[in-house]
Length: 285
Ligand SMILES: O=P(O)(O)OC[C@H]1O[C@H](O[C@H]2O[C@H](CO)[C@@H](O)[C@H](O)[C@H]2O)[C@H](O)[C@@H](O)[C@@H]1O
Image 1: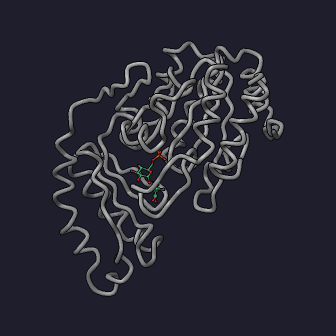
Image 2 (image 1 turned 30 degrees about the vertical axis):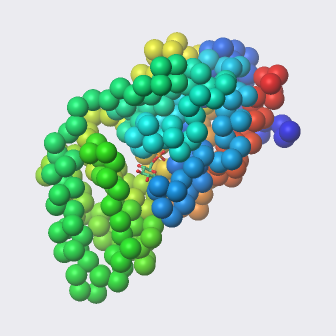
């Protein structure tokens, strides 16, 4: 088993030291897609890395708690992650839809706010918007763009399977922002995805709330995408309040912003699982 990698920043090293010194007050918070689950072409094919559940199950009993904070519906992340009914993960929490939904392993239930009417209205306009944006020479760029309806709570336009994914993303950014604005929604850009979702919640708000309610003394947050920057902001802010933090980037060639701010960059979900395993070992698992 590899040793725990050393963070490259003093604050990251302090975060890791605090986690190891008082693990009962440590929270390990993780994004799902791109962090626990390798990125794949079709969102419905995503599954947790084969070693993820075992590593989490070794680590979780030795620390305060494990929470997954994801743009996915909570129930989908639990299913794709294989988190339910796993010995060791009986205190796990999954915050779905950027924190709007909550699943608790202890009860197996999901709590969720009412649907935002703008999501359905925006979704109904998407076919015409995509057809309009893809007329003329842009048609070839948009071929393969697909829409993910997230249970009426959000809608995501994916460009990963388009003929030219980045060109399609760039082409759709402005019209989708206009659509989101018109329906009182937030536009969340991610890895070859533009998501329209209700405003008022993000991973930073979700993480800060969770850390306060659990009385955390330290936090490790690992993410890979732009939606995780809000959680990075929250950790940096909470450091000022005495909660030690370790920011981990699940590295990829698609997103540079997180790596630039992280205390530790690991090699995608494989690297995240290795890190979780090494922490479990360091804590005597
Ligand atoms: O917060 P996350 O757990 O990172 O979820 C964010 C979005 O992830 C999913 O899309 C991403 O993963 C897909 C499967 O690997 C990939 O095909 C896509 O290109 C990625 O952007 C998910 O489909 C979205 O609904 C989430 O919002």
